[in-house]
Image 1 (spheres, rainbow, N blue to C red):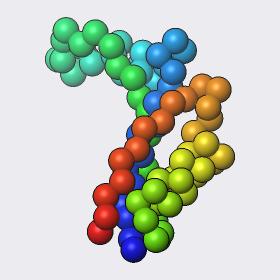
Image 2 (image 1 turned 90 degrees about the vertical axis):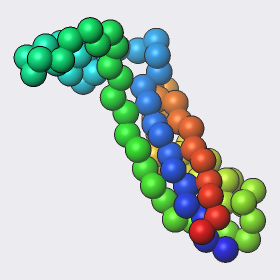
Image 3 (image 1 turned 135 degrees about the horizontal axis):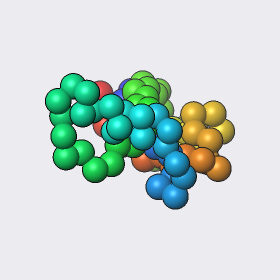
Length: 83
């Protein structure tokens, strides 16, 4: 079976996010005001071949923990849907 995994990787809330701070600071220059906090992360979409949703979930979890996310600085969440 094929599954689509949608993965969101974000910096830990306790850590500074220089990209987010820069965006938040400069929104006023394009006339966007009253934005309190901006956090920038990454989104990964992945097609996984597996016999079950549990197996697909394990594959995605391994990919996140071993390659996609730096667990010292980032957290991840994902959802899986059968195609």
